[in-house]
Image (tube, rainbow, N blue to C red; front, side, top):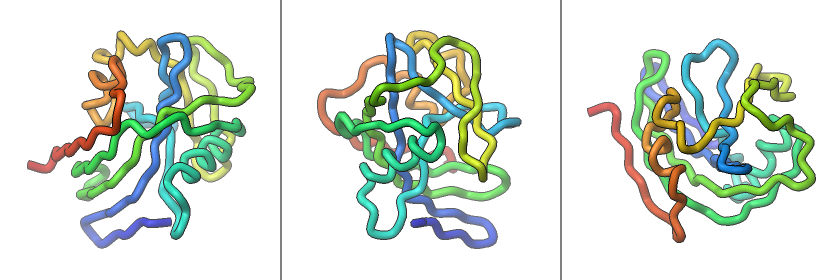
Length: 157
């Protein structure tokens, strides 16, 4: 994985899935966290970032997904668990192929063995009330861009 860390800092190169169904977006959290995020994961060495997010959806949910198009390139600086993070991410609009995921507002478990993830569908027009990170998503998911946008988020300053 393209992931570097020191005693006080972490760098990640991630790919992120934006999965929308009937004006709901699929979010996940590690069981016990008090916030939500979009699914995705770290890019492997020499792996195309679009292939990464397809792989991650398979690993986390057991679902086949396809990339529709890229939405955002994000450079994100934030603090988490006492460390400073620098993260580069590509966010992709995704489509599930013949999905058997439960749909509704109840949380359900992912299938990845290494991480206990909960998934839940959230109404896009109610995201301002959801502890969702990075925060720009609360607004930007309400109107997906036609082209790719670059977004810089710095919560460290």
